[in-house]
Structures are given as structure tokens and as C-alpha cells.
Length: 251
Length: 311
Image (cartoon, rainbow over all chains, first blue to last red; front, side, top):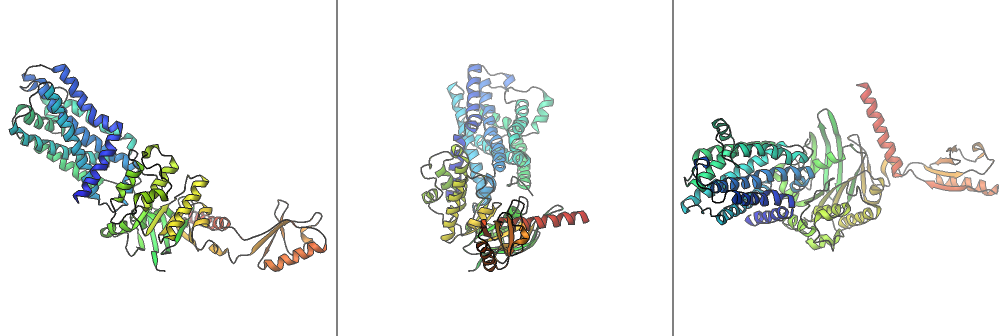
């Protein structure tokens, strides 16, 4: 069984790295963003504007979160919508490969990519002098990353289930993500309480907050934020399971 | 030979549209069976029900001893059937070899990847990315995916649509070879020639109904129907002067229909020899598969229009 999962992951990885578009947007982009931010904010000191940490320390956490969004949510929604439209999903369905195995392989691939990108972002931060998080924070960091990856995978599949037309998929995905990422403080801390209350109930900000806590502030598990994130994950999973279609032309 | 597929009283509707109405047929193990019919006749719907993609509304279906509507036996069924769908569906960024090796991993006893690459004439292109293949090459890769699991039953939904004549002939050759090694093949097509060349038996579907079934030679009574003798009558001879009843065709030829063509021909040729004239462009023909097909599908269309206007 694990051999089959590995079989799937391997071919997903091949498809992913050879597709210039997916490799650029999910992998190169976040690394590029943190490199640029590093150049812009290098040497900035801790301030209350950045919740008591240095700007770059803040960005290492939020851009790591962004990379998980890209490799799980965006990638899955677009890949699944496209594969369904092309009939590739129907083709998979026609083989003895169990449905769950297909998804386990795909999700494992996404999580693998996000862990690699997040690690690279921490590494770039390290090159700019951002300290590697304390050992006591590693467990909370890993748990937060995995929960985030799982939740955004579920939301990605749910969005793929709701998208009818694969050509529209990238636009729909970005249309939802772009304002949300901005308002959730990924590119700059948000000081408006109203905005924070609203985005705090949506999935991106809790993920940012939880990762900031563990990676930058050293405050361990952010249970409230993780709870909101998990709820969104469950909601995504319910929509995904109930609405997902394999056939480009449903009955 | 036992039956690979048995369908009885199959029915399927989409909303108010009856796509398949009371279709019954059997496919013997080891034969090539073609479902022939115009677009939208219900061929693909029937095939998709057999493949387990769509649920039926009524009737019974047996595919290799399994009911394809029974999801709990789906995996067992998919282990033993292969299929090629209408759309070309292959991952663009994998190579030919990777695409096949990936799917081979899904089956308990797959065919050898290189053997299948050779069978579909893709040898030498193993390391090419799928997205750089031509349409015909992608289609052949698709066909290779259908047989990689070494299925005992292969479903082909319009397998040669978009092929050039050479590619079509080699695809037919390949399908025949599969049949000869014991694979049962069920295919849909709207090419008369394909059915005639390839199929051991044909069923014609029109407007959701099975209107005729049989070997290509006997379909629609082709073998028992009257032969047609056509020729250009000698100049200055009117139709009425011929020794047998004939009707003019409008293109300068006349047609004689006969249940006893040997006798009729003898009468005609004897008459011509005696008068020292010739019967130019003389041919004897039976109704072609296309004639039968057009008659059967046209009758049905007319009938359903009538039904529609009565409602």
C-alpha cells in the first residue's frame, strides 16, 4: 500500500516539476518574494507594528504560510479542475486504482512540496540573519504546517468541485486568494480591528497567526487559530466529498 | 463461446429525454462487436453504463459476470476491462514510457510496457513528452493505456475518429490482433467502413433503440434482400423493350431488382447477345451496409418525428 502511495507521489512530482507554470507559481514565487523582502527589510529592528518581532522574522512566517496556500489550495484547485476537464480524472477512475489512493498520493505530493518550500523560506531567512526557531517550537511549527496543509488541501478540492470550467480555474482561485492574503496580513501587518475580526474568522489569518506565534514569537501552539483553521478544513472536506465530480460532463 | 456482455431491456433517461430505450444485446467472448449509429443515438451512454460510469434506470447488465452498477465490485471489474474514451486524456508533462508505467502499476498483472509501446507503434518515442506528440500519436497512447492492464474486455468509444486513413488501418490491424489473442472488443463508431472491416457483429442504434443486429453480411436482411442489376441500356432501346422489368435511374442507367439474379442475368445477357449489343457498365450488387444503415436510421427518425407530432 505504501508502495502504491509512493508510486503516485513520484509521478505527481514528475508532472509538477516539469510544468513550468506550476513550478514557478507554487515554488519559485514564494522564495522570490522572501528574497526580495529580505533585501528590503534586512536589518530592520523589532517593533510593535510587527507584533514585537523584526520585519523579516514576521515575513518568514507569513510567506511560509503563503507557500503552503500555493502548493495546497491553489495547486490542487487548478490541477483537479484541469484534469477533470481534460478527462484525465475519468481515465483514472477507469483503472483499478482506488479513489482514496489517488487522493492520498496527490495530497501527499502537495504536503511534500509545501514542506520543501517552507523549509527553503526559513533557509533564505537564515541567510538574512533571521534566527532559526527554538527547538521547543519545532513541534508546534510542524503541527501548524501540517494542519494548514491539510485544511488548505481540503479547501482546494472543494473549490475544484465547485468550479465548472477549468479555463476559469486560475482566475477564480486567485480572485478568492489575492484579497484575502492581503487583508490577512501576509504582505503587511493589518492594524484595523474590524478587518482583523473578519479575517480572523476566515482561514488565512488564523494560519498566519499560528505560524507567527510558533516561528517568530516563540509562543507555541495557538489553539484558537488552529481551531478555526481545522473548522475550515472540515467544511472544505464536507463540500469536497459531497460535490466532487470525476466526469467532465456530469449527468 | 460464452457471453462476455449481456444486456437486457436497458433503459436510461436524462430528465425527459429517453437516451436508451429497451436495448438488449449479447457480446460473445472473443469477438469484435460494434455499436453503430448516428451522433446522439445512445451509443456512448450504453457504453458508459457497461463501463460502470453511469447508472441505468432499468434492465439488467452483465459484464464478465459482474453487474457494473454494483460499486462494491467496481475494482474487480476495472481490473479486467480496459477502455478508451472519446476524448484524448493523457498527462502532458509525462513521457510516453512514464505514462504507461504509471498506469501499469495500477493492475495486478499488467502487460509489459515496452511490448505495448511496440504494439501501438510508438517505439522510438518512449522518452518524448506527451505534450509534444501529434494528435494521432496521443490517441495511440490512449489506446495503449486501454490495453496496459491486459484486459479480457476492451471498450473503445469511437477509437479512430480523427485518424488519417493509414493510421485508421493500422489501428484496425491492432484491434484485430487483440481479438486474435483472446480479447473481446466492444466499440462504438459512426463509420460504416470501420464496422464493416472490423466487426464480427454489429448492432445499429438509432434514437436510443436497437434497430438491427447481426453480422455485417446479414444486417437488416442484406443477405436475403433482392440483388440489384444495373447497366446502361443499348441506345434506342426503351425500358419497356427489355426482357425483364426495369426502372430508369435517371443517370442514364437502369436498375433491375431480382430475387434470382442468376436467372435474370442469363435472360438479359442472352437477349443482348442475340441482338448483338452490349450492356455497358453492368454491375450486380446487394444493398451496401450503408444503404441498410441509412434505411434503418431514417425509418426510425421519421417514426420518432411522427411520435413527437402526435404528442
